[in-house]
Image: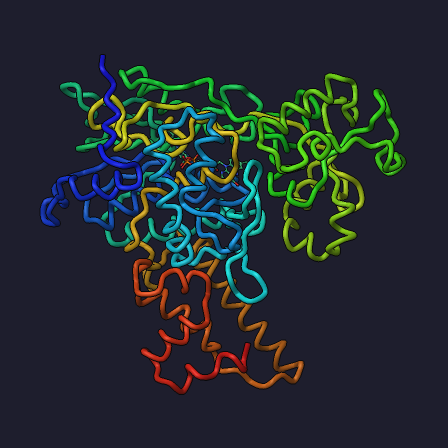
Length: 550
Ligand SMILES: Cc1cc2nc3c(=O)[nH]c(=O)nc-3n(C[C@H](O)[C@H](O)[C@H](O)COP(=O)(O)OP(=O)(O)OC[C@H]3O[C@@H](n4cnc5c(N)ncnc54)[C@H](O)[C@@H]3O)c2cc1C
C-alpha cells in the first residue's frame, strides 16, 4: 500500500493558499445533494458540523453524550495558542510554526503545522466574534499568558475554562445550523462501525443509548471527530466516555493508525490517591506561569512544606533550566518530577508528587490577582484534596493526557479509507511527538469558517439550548444590569444603555463576518476601530464619546 500525504507543491508559506485555489468547488445547488456524517461534537466535530451545515451540506451529527455541550473538549482549561503577537514579544506565524515543529521533536508533518500556524490568527477572531469571553487586560485588549516550551506569550484563555467557553461558542454555531435544518443532531448514539461500500466509507452503524436499538445511517462521506485514546492507559486526564471505540472500529475496517506511541504526559495533575479512581484531574499548565516547582533537598524529608526553610528547598526546574525555568516543555517537567520521586525526594503520603508553590506569586501580585487568573483551578483543587492552595503548595504529578497518534490522514485530513475523514485528537496529523500545551485546541478549531459566527436569533432558541448559549447570554445581560445598578447606587453619571465602545463592538460582531473590515482590531476591542465602525453606523455623535466614558 502506498500512503500519499497529498502535500501540495510549492514553498511552505504558499501551500495552503495554492491548495485552496486548486481544489474543485462544489456549486451551492449541488451541496444540498450531499449528506455528510460527522461523529463527535467536541471542538473538532461541532466546528466541522456547523461549518459544513453553513456551507449548505446536509449534515448528520452524532455524539455519545445527552448534549453536544458535554463533549470532552469542555475539560480543556489552560488556553489556545495563536500567533497574534499582541504582546509584541517577537511572535510570528513562523515562530509558532518553528516552536511547534521543535516541540513535536521534528516528527510533525511540516506542511500541516505551517497551515495550523497561519490559521491560528483567524481562529481567535472567529472565537471572539462568536462571543467567547477571552480574558482581557485592563485596557480591553485580549490578554495572553505563556505555556511550557515557548518564550513568547501567545496563549489566549478564559480563566481556567477555555475549553468550556470555546465549546459553548462552537455549540451556538452548531445549534444555529440545527435550527436552520442543515444539521440533524443525534445525541446519545454510540458509533459501533463504519460501513464500507466498494472500498469507500458510506455510513455508520450506531447504538441508540436510550432505546438500545441499532441504527444505520448513510452518507456520502464520514467524518470521525471522536477524540483521543488516553483512556487506553486506564488512569488519564480524559473522561471515561472518551473510549476510542470509533477510531478502533474504523481501524478494523482498514483505516491505518499512525504513531500510537505518541502520548503526551502532563506534568501537573492531582496525584493518584488510591485504587478507587477512574480518572485523574488535570491542574492546568498555565499554573506554572506563577507557581514554582520544588521538592525538599533532603531525601525522605517528611516535614510539612511550611516547615521546610528556603535554603532546604530544591527549585529543580529553575536550577537546571534557567532560561525556561518552571515553563519547560511538558516532557521535561514530567521526566524531572519522576526523577525526583525516584530519588526519594517526592512529597505527600505516596511520595509520588512534587510541590507547585504560589507563595511568592501571592506576595508579589496579591491573592486577588491570583484568584482572578486561576480561581476556579484552586477551587477544584480544594474540592478534590481538601487543601487550600493559597496557603499551602499544591501537590502535582505527571499523568497521561493527550494523544498525538491516531488514524492516519493526508493533507486533506482524509484517512487511507476513501471517504473517511478524521479530525481533532482522533487523527495523528499535526503535532508529531508534541510536548507543548495549548496547541491541541488550536488544531480542533481548524475547520471553522468565518461565516458561522453569527449567533442564533433569539426566538429560535429551544429548551435544549437554554442552559448553554441562552444561559450564557442571559448571565452576561444580568451582569450588565447589575453593573448599571451598582454605578447608579455609587452616584456615577448615567451611561447610555450600551456604552458606545461595547455597542460598536457588538455591532461589528453582529453585522460583519469575522472576515469583515477590521477583524483584528475588533477582536482586540480596539476603541479606534470601534469608533470608526460606530461613526459609520450611528453618526459622529456617539463616536466622539468613548474616551470620556472609559
Ligand atoms: C483535562 C484536559 C485539559 C486540556 N486542556 C487543554 C488546553 O488548555 N489547551 C489545549 O490546546 N488542549 C487542551 N486539552 C486537549 C484538548 O482539550 C483536546 O485535544 C480536544 O478538546 C479534543 O477535541 P476533539 O473534538 O478532538 O474531541 P472530544 O472533545 O473528546 O470530542 C469527542 C466527541 O466524539 C464523541 N464520540 C466519541 N466516541 C464516539 C462514538 N463511538 N460514537 C459517537 N460519538 C463518539 C464524543 O461524544 C464527543 O462528542 C486538554 C485535554 C484534557 C483532557
